[in-house]
Figure 1 (tube, rainbow, N blue to C red):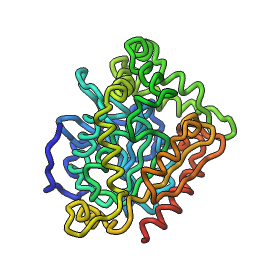
Figure 2: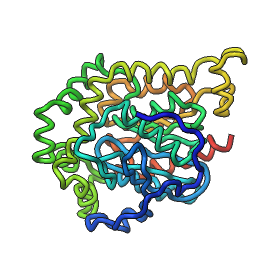
Figure 3: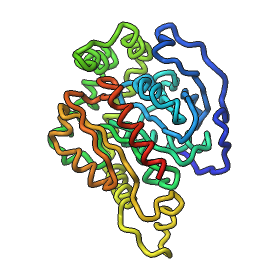
Figure 4: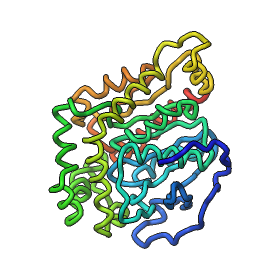
Length: 334
């Protein structure tokens, strides 16, 4: 989908193609960021670029958009440069009717987005199915990254995960596509069941911000596409797991080419540092995915939030900001 091009600008406004009026359903107090646009692979990608300092790149989950991480960005932008993009068809990034999401295609698009903006020495924030796409970039380009922040998700093949694979197949099925495109079922079910800490519901303005990008029925297929791809991307996920395992493998002799990659990334003796944020109430923890993620990133710190759900940045953003801020301060300062 893309070809390497390392001679790109580090300017945060590189290739910005103008601005777009803020849609009426988006409350500026909830999302107080400047919208930027850049052309990547022929697609107009919306992103925000807030604050200064070490870079944290946010990739939104498969349900939602950069709005989902708004509170984390607000809490970190006084110390870090927070960049968050919307994948095509999500949030404020348009997509042509023919666009179809796949893990590999989205991973290549994120890679090209990074190249276009000239980003380096980043901490990658990802979760959910789109996290599987984002961390593919880390597997291919470890020298671009300093650390990882991982919320609940999978970075390995899921075909043998008997408790979750049937769900992924169902959400990626033609029947579920019909429910999602016709009734916006996927989003509405999530908005009805997810709560904030203290069993608070989403505010009217927050509901508008989630529903606004999904008014057009044609856009509602994009989360479905991701689940459909996840069910059929075994080769990509096998390769992803192997590449991430290699980042934490024992360092080989200096003549080994893999060692130079560690040296370029500033990790000559250690693997990729990772902060893992999970919820004790989520089924993913009960399935043993946290220990598996800990094995994949041996140099980790684990935070388990009590009572949270699959989107802890919505359930308890203050705790997430505190955990990320203190861990980043220690990790980046090394």
